[in-house]
Amino acid sequence: MDIFELIKTRRSIRTFSDRPVPDEILNNIIEAGMWAPSGLNNQPWKFAVIKDGDLKTKISGLTRYSKIVSGSNVLIAVFLDHPSGYDRTKDTLAVGACIQNMLLYIHSVGLGAVWLGEILKNKDKALQLVGNPGDLELMAIIALGYPAAKSGKGTRKNPEQTIFFRK
Figure 1 (cartoon, helix red, strand yellow):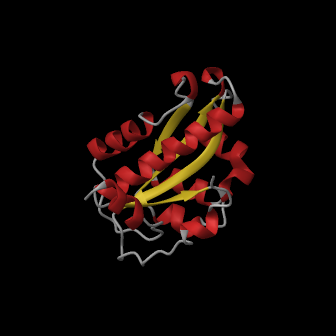
Figure 2 (figure 1 turned 60 degrees about the vertical axis):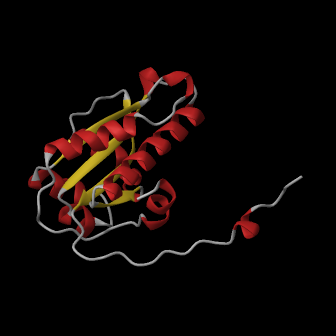
């Protein structure tokens, strides 16, 4: 599918089948994220790939979206790597672009995912669960797997409703 169709058909998927996601696909998801733009090409991201059921259960206790976390096949925790950063705003934007690349790749291979940010209220506890690398800051967790159901149709505002200046 062309890129515009891919962008327009991607949805947040919150329920997943039990079908395992192959490691090759997980590696490609990470690589897709790594090709996001970043200021000075500093690539300020690090990842934790979590498949262990007990660890997913512990992480699920840190968010009100516990059913999504525990029901996912895989979690990818995305971190801002402070030592590689140079400007917090630019680095945070780069991590967002990284996550979007990952979500688009996930959709392109028939998987589903949701970007979870509410867990950030417990980011220090989440960091402890993945070994407490103190120079990293949790930015999001992506819950993913093969969708259990088809996604719905999305809607967006008309561009003229969002463009406030044009000259």
